[in-house]
Image 1: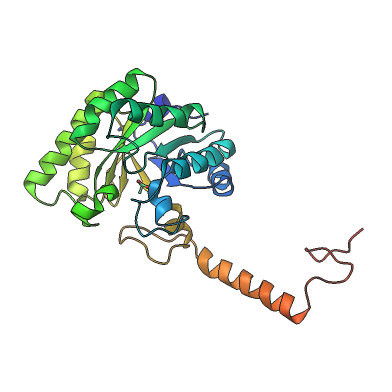
Image 2 (image 1 turned 90 degrees about the vertical axis):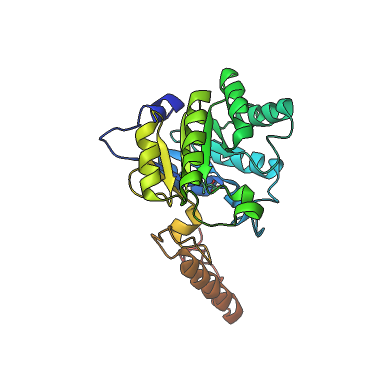
Length: 268
Ligand code: KIV
């Protein structure tokens, strides 16, 4: 079982970087578990992928809670982190704390991730005091798509300083690690050197302590991927071919076979 302390201790180590991928269901989580991925993020990127919304904004607390519970049931070793969806934190302190705590208590996750801003520093401190581990997230924060779009962040000097300062304040508040999304590699390297907690990069260059990607992009399921993602397989094409082959087999009458089960062996 991977703990928050295990992850925290992986900052600045000469050993392998921390690996993190998203998952939104038990099947995917069990595969990530089999190959030894360190952390599984039940990201609100479920909005752009599994849930079919056109951004992360419509994702609800109940959608994340249900998917987090499915992932947590399938993951014994990996650290499971639930992403707090838009407006589930930040409006009211006690509601924010309760929403985060219920994901540990009812869904069985190990930590929560919160898209960071000035308003999440005190909240992070309070959550950590209560025993709710927090992963911070700076740079491109997709819940601010209406304000920022999906552009790379931290390209200007003032903006880079603001992001570094936010990262430092969240570390001081007790965050156990921090996602750096779509920022220049030099800024990510500077933040990584400045902090004692591990930085987990996505579109932030090679110098972070770990890397995270959306699993649909890695598996080649997404129709569109961000420029920094890499496809490691072409599952969309494989799924389409399998579904088309099934349709053809049923329509042509070649499936099911009389007396044969689905893998072609004779039924007993
Ligand atoms: O929701 C998500 O998948 C994320 C990662 C991209 C870091 O926040």
